[in-house]
Picture 1 (cartoon, helix red, strand yellow):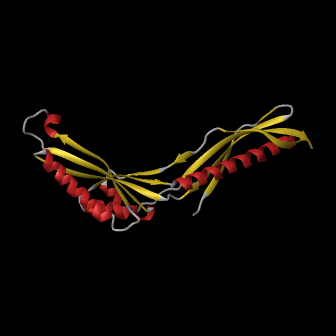
Picture 2: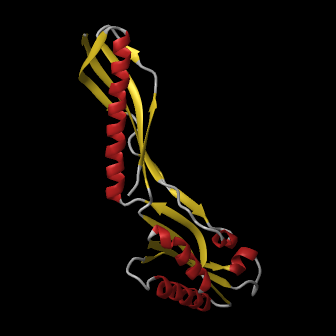
Picture 3: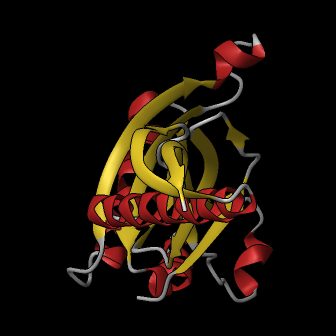
Length: 217
């Protein structure tokens, strides 16, 4: 799995025998999986008709997308809406039932799965690209290590200007732990699925402030 690290340097402060530096480390990795938010809807003059139609649509979606063990299917929420109450009329609009569904799949299958959902009558709300927990923890550790390493490099450079050397760490603070940048693709328009979907890498950043003791060179 490819990854990319970045660091951002912030101002340095120096006292008579100590120096404090700030640095930010950021690591990126391709998403581990995609979560497709799908909707199955049903309408009817009676509540049970609307619920039955929505359930049938949800069943078709589940059958379609669970053809491989790589996909995971979950019904998140079921709603029933009375159109008569919304419109303030009697015997007007029918009932509408909605099943909100989440499908997890490999990132490279997201478009294929989304098209399958649409083909059997479902709708796509969004596609979210995410990291597994173990990947997130690894990126956090790598970003933190990058930030600490860059903080020391910065402290050493500034100390040399003053004719001093950096000694041991006196304190270290993690100022912005685990900032994660998930990639979400809005699929509210069906035309979006006509093109290619290229998920961006997901990144986590760590910011540290490190205080070092200074010694004579």
